[in-house]
Image 1 (spheres, protein in one colour):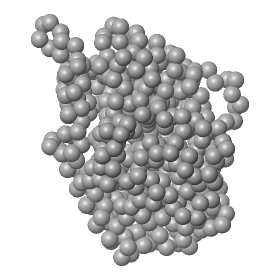
Image 2 (image 1 turned 60 degrees about the horizontal axis):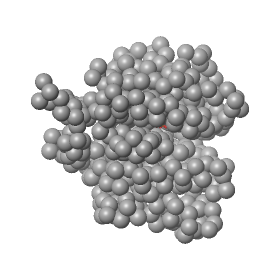
Image 3 (image 1 turned 60 degrees about the vertical axis):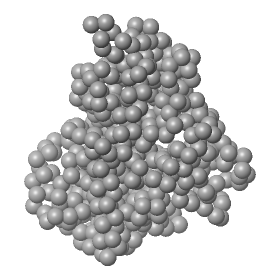
Image 4 (image 1 turned 180 degrees about the horizontal axis):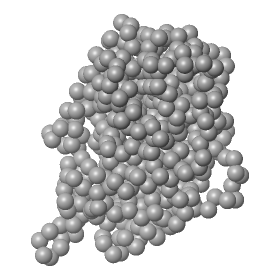
Length: 477
Ligand code: UDP
């Protein structure tokens, strides 16, 4: 007799979230061949090539369903990409429920695991009498803030960004109000209301899995775990989940061209510069960054995108014509930095690049996947956050873990070229960089240990899987 354990995963249409939760799905089925996973994916429009390639490379034992595309034509054409995602999630709830209900009727579900951005799926699981879990693809620090946000809302009257003292979040380093996630920057806004409501739904979860690990955020993880009896759901640190072997189309530059260039350089001598799957800078900042890199005299590999008013491009990976990005660089920059610099339009195989021995630093927007990819490769960071919860991640890696340097902004919010020159040299060849590198190497060791057969994350996920298996359906052979 065999026990079949069927888990449904509910995703959100955000590239980095998909990448993370699909790694979790792979890990889960690798733990036990009797665990079956079906991914339910709400979408708007048809998925771009980079998203398709995430699904096409899944093992055949993971089933997936793309739900009918949500129509967003009634929304203004030019809205922020985050609002499109929010609207898609909101409008998909009835069809997610139908999909879950159908799956559950045909092949009994043991648990539903929903991405942390779609807490609306948790009450659906309860309605179907199925265990409800959240997969949180960010830091435990952010999770602690989410779980604490309603209390904070009652405790503090003013705007958080105007507070003179850093805020205390349970188990976390003190954090400036201006480093809190975007929805908390305007308490009168709709986004803040939606954020608080979403956070309250985390309390419905039977457990929350985090893409973090004990050695990385021990104090915060333990602080939350101690409160499990007081209404806080069980917390399962099971990361770091890093994707391997998928790279998006590199727009005509073959992987081998990067690697030929990387191979030419000494160990740890190149700074990799990239702002995540969609992040981009304004034109003035692109120019300052170019001059700063040039002034620093250090080698760099820079993934460059055109400026845009939201600071994020949401159609990377589509078949749309792309702009010539080089026009945004200062005159003569490419010629002057030839040999020292490699500028790549739009997209690069980041994981493979970070794993190359010539990379010695990462100027990153501190998206959580990028941060973990740096950690598992032992690469020190320059923390250059742009949006979402990235400023909080930057505070964690700079002030908490001390594995990053954070450049200062001028009064217009721009990092000037001399500041860039300074931080790049401090990180790549300075004393501060040496100490940071040592601490990052230690974290890398912690990440490797956590994922070993008897490591903390593997043990945590195995225990959870055992619990789910005990609730599976027994099949007659
Ligand atoms: N990424 C990549 N190539 C790029 C830019 C990004 O492979 O040129 C990947 C990167 O490795 C990471 C993900 O896209 O896995 C970005 O996720 P992250 O959480 O860092 O940032 P977000 O995209 O959410 O801003």
